[in-house]
Length: 196
Image 1: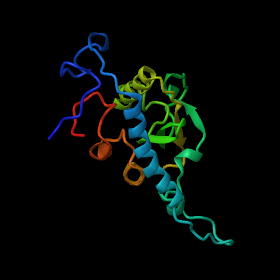
Image 2 (image 1 turned 120 degrees about the vertical axis):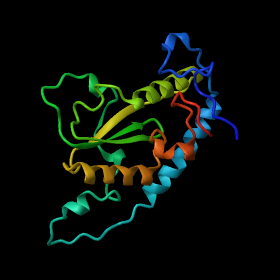
Image 3 (image 1 turned 45 degrees about the vertical axis):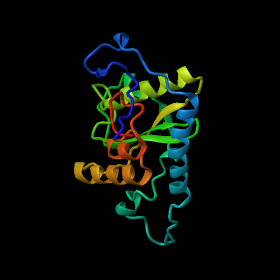
Image 4 (image 1 turned 135 degrees about the horizontal axis):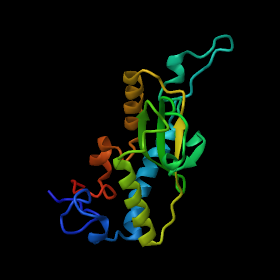
């Protein structure tokens, strides 16, 4: 079994040593593009294959219909800056699902859920590191990105149903930064050694 090369050399985890002491490994533009094209091809099939549901002219949609993962298109939500968590906010926010997207291709990189949309990323969050590594690899390879986030603010307030919806969306879109999909896409941007 071969191991996925980490973006960091020396076998050290970026969690244990400052970034400036680590020598980054360069990924070629071709390998980055190949990885992205595989994810893109899958996600486009998901987008194209979304089932069409007949709506009644006389009934309002039920809450379960609104929360159905088949009807939620992360790419259709309003784009926000990926650094949204740095903005000052007067409240903690509301329950939400959030999506990290590279709008350049476009690719859905990560699906998450939160009870407090304005506070979720203010502390530690592994996805911040993945995004840094992703952006740095693109920069070094001379490739462009257009990283952003999108929030779906109609998520269930109750934790369990919100987490079930998140899990369903992770499974549906196979977002590569979610650990549930690392075996499928590999982990070139996590900064950890994993099987590829």
